[in-house]
Image (tube, rainbow, N blue to C red; front, side, top):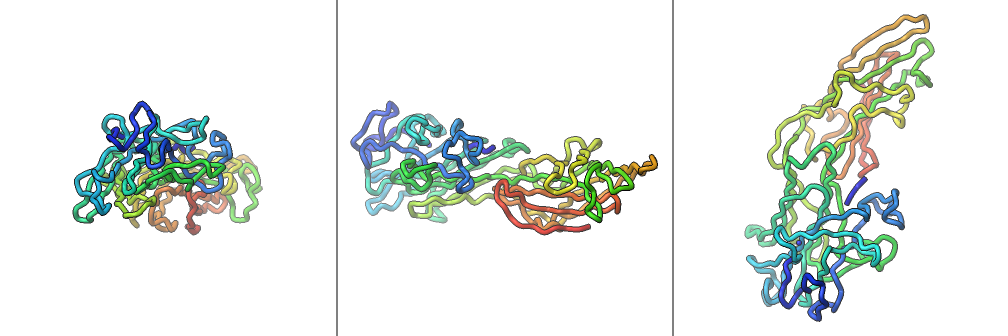
Length: 384
């Protein structure tokens, strides 16, 4: 489910026509990418298989790269100049390259062939992403005395179905490495480990009575219960903001995660698409493992959850008794998300909120968890 920058530099990089060059650091060794699994150990030996937990190799991702070349962009002592760098990839502005899986040579590689620079002090910094295209900035920060990169994903590109992926920035790279590989150490390249930039939430409901003896219907022996969750809203949370990622040169050959912040945005609500009719909790949904999604899984901006953020909804309960009589109630419920132990939606994490309805006792319990689908965390059950 998950998918997963170069101008030709004289005397440093091979031409766009892929001609060989003796100016490569190690002659004729092209730049490739070593892409990590999202979850360690779960990628199939065949990366096209459905079991692949990350970027499928029949897809591609984008990359930008910045060259600091010996004698041009570096001082004699190897320190970087404050006003000089070169776009490593040779395409026109914005100098990005498409990285695809080369099944014949078993590697992730750019559309054109690029070679590592020869200078012993030369290095390249790589930024890679998949999904919505960010606005990319690479500039010298005089205050911090270092080069920094910024990616901004515009609010308009972030939707409920978005899956923004970006890799840890690979700083000061000088050669292909085997940091990550699929099934053998021969798969080498720029170390590229992707992460989800957004959070995800889903709200589910199931039915259970006080004695935990509902086995079908659902019924407790005296009545069959029909339960529908309506008018579900989570509000107000930050919506419509841009996601801004920053990364500063650590001064060493390494990969480094991005710092994420929100820009702009306003308070908005997350709500059911069909609030009036709601979602009927299936008769079989009498345990958390069989819960019905009453708010389908959707992406949300990572953010701190204020104590005022509440989940509100109606529980429509109809009891049909064995004597034919019916009983109908519509219960309005609300709870602060903080009561679940949820104080923050963290990027790369999926949160599942479970509503447990006890119709025979008119009880509604809240059973939150953070799903293991992305990255697992721990919360506690909240009883109302």
